[in-house]
Image (cartoon, rainbow, N blue to C red; front, side, top):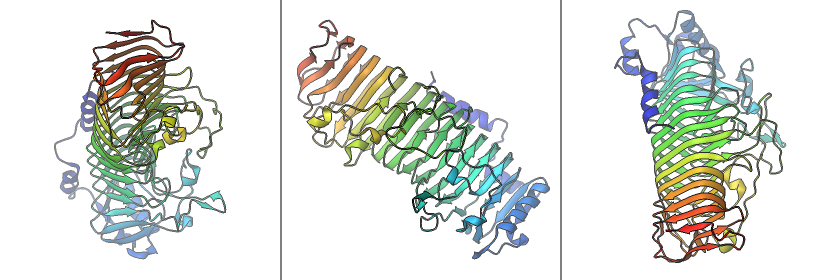
Length: 542
């Protein structure tokens, strides 16, 4: 298990080992006398917002690379370009008032580059690098993909169309993004594949003009720091991925403000290798639709040693979704996403989700769509999510669930694309826990903004569950906690915030060893009610 904040310190130490106290900007300034700069205007760039400046910008980059590196300067002006390819030891500095503008003509984007195996229609990109080292994108200017839907439609006549990413780096190392603004990609914004030693500092992303507007997608990357940045994206904002056997690992996200229409932070969905040693801390996630934090393992890899702490969530939908599924994609060919309900596993074995710690979370959930509310942690039959800690968490939920909602049976959908609202309205308003073991809730509090008739927690096919210091609104629900086929469950020092009929309801002939110890039952008319199929010795009350 991770030591709290320990990996964060380790990650920063590794990344900055051997560096002096000078900031990156100071290094650039100090080295001006010995590092050559290359003004793209000297190579013929017009910067008039109309002329195509691809050749001039590329000529400056090539000259810089041939001479051992330096700074390619994009001065004030509006420079339209197709694909440009960065080289080792090249810094692309977009000065204040400078704008790199993506061409609106797909013919201006290179095809002699590695494409995207997960999203083949996004294979073109504006800025590309491959097998390069020590590359930097910085400056007070803007890189604008101009990826509006009118110029880059998602479909024409029912067929998916090509939409370029803003940038893709493949098998590169020592990558820096500093002080730059990235905006309006036609698809993903920054796609890094099999890259190492990545630093993102004080970067702004504003990309919500098309579909699939991800922020940072990091596929099989390691030694990553993303900090002090503000990301507003139409799709997943910060998204570790894994389409190969390589893990995305040793990652720190710190002190960022993030807003997204799908997820502020998501591991997956591509998850063939997995994710390890990832820390997300001291962030604000706001105005997030479809969920905030998603930890997904559906393609046979391993997701483990994830630590998320000190997060404020403001005006969000589902705060947390953890899913171990069985899509089983093997990524041996470019494949578009499949969202249909009736699908089968594509062949890879079921992976693992384990050792996840989430603590010090404050969240306010808003919205009227009940299918996008609540939290869900779920494996599939025979394969459990393991060892998850939820500690010091306070969440205000919208409420509005009905008695009919409380009786809903959630489909397994083992191989379907993992999106929480695809499961429909959950039978709990707070946490739905299924096919899981070793789950700990410590000092977790739920409150409601409106009347609610679903339990706060529903546990289905779970074992080794510990709930301590739990406090929640019961509103008009039949019970505060509902347990179905639960084994080895301890509920201690917990209580309902208001009057309700039943504290804990137990169902299922496999339920056993359920212990209630030191709970405040003053608000509950009955401490426990067991179904007719439950063994009389299943529940112990102290």
